[in-house]
Length: 309
Image (cartoon, rainbow, N blue to C red; front, side, top):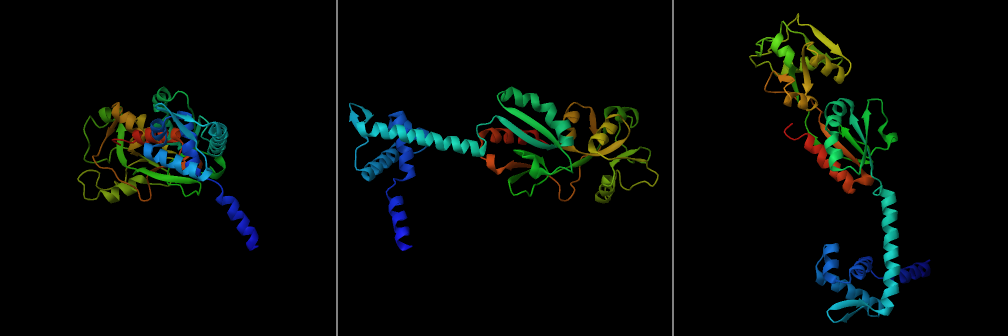
C-alpha cells in the first residue's frame, strides 16, 4: 500500500500548478501580459511570475520577445491550444452544473406580494433585461419547496439546505382604508375612535387584537370596542380587495400596498405600524446559482422594490 501511495504522489507532483496553467492560457490568448493581467485581475508582474514558474517546471521557454511584442515559441503553441480547449471544457462543465448558461430564472413569491408588487413592476425588469426569461410562481403554504427546483424564493426565511437566505426588511402592518372610504365614511378626518366603522382582518390571525394590545397608550384606536363589526377573510389578497372596495379599515403589510399609497388610492390612518414576531421578508437563492450574475442582478432589483418601504 505504501508503494501505491508513493506512485500516486509522483504522478500528481509532475503536474504544474493550475494557477500557472490558467495564467499561461489567458496570456496566450491576449499575447500581452498587461491585458492578461486585467483579465485575471492581477498585476503584470504576477503574470510574469506565473509564466516563469511554469517555464521552470516544464523546462522550456514559452514566450519569446520579438521587438516589443511577446510571441509563443513553437513548442508552446500546441501546448496553449490544448490548454485553452481544456479550460473551455471546464467552463462548460461548470456552467452546466450551476445553470449559468440558462437565461431562465424560476422564482417563487408569496402570492400577495407577487400580485400587488412584483407583477406591476415586471415591465421595468423586462425593459432592463429583455434577454432573460423570468418565470414567477405564486407560492402557497401547501407547496413542497424542495420539489419545485426554484432558483430564488421571496418570502419568509427558508431553512432548506440548498438555499441561502438574506434578510430584506421587517413586515410592518398599518391601519389603512381606501380613499373613497376616507372621504365618504371618515369625512376626510382621521377618527379618534373606530367604533362606528367595520374592520377587516384575516381569519385565525386576528391582527387587530395584536394592534390594540401594542397601542394601549395611544389616544387613537385605544381599545377594541365590543360592538365593532369585523369582516374576516381567509387570504390577504381578499382582505386587500375588500379594503379597496371600501368595506372597512384593514391592517395590511405596507409593502403590499406601497403602489396604492403612492397613487393616493389608500390612506394610512396611523403613523406607526406594528411588526409581528418571527416575520420579515427574505430573499433565498439556490446555492447552485448563487454566483450567477443574472441572479445577482435580479436580487439587486428585488431589494430596490423595498427601498423607502
